Image (cartoon, rainbow, N blue to C red):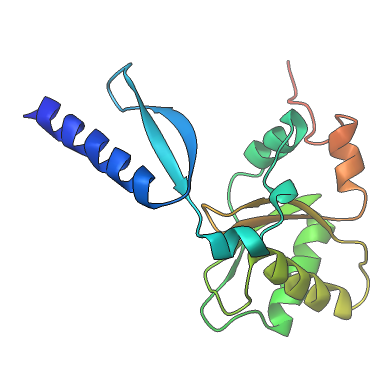
Length: 165
């Protein structure tokens, strides 16, 4: 029964890969060492409006992404407001980088959402040079950093090393 389900799932993925443009990745199935292809679906419209350089990551970006456990700010269906900008500004003053979950298409692409939210944060003053660190489209999450965060990541100063005692 389980073997039949796994086989049907694999056939379903093969069927989907024939229909949609697919970026092939390899994942390990739960409770198994067998590997099956998984898919990352993006419509051609998404590819046209999406800057792929924001999804490529380096070991430093990956470490920073893992260091920041969860989004501290969420943008809901009504879109971004001035209070979201104020919150992001306060969060960036307290943290070097912050993840923001975007739960709406109202702002357009995630790059457009970054620009909108960044504008709201910088509009209130007291902060400038907010940086786009990384976008994860599969989770609708944007990682913002205060000015200089990219350089800190590049030089290995962020995330800070764990205290070893």
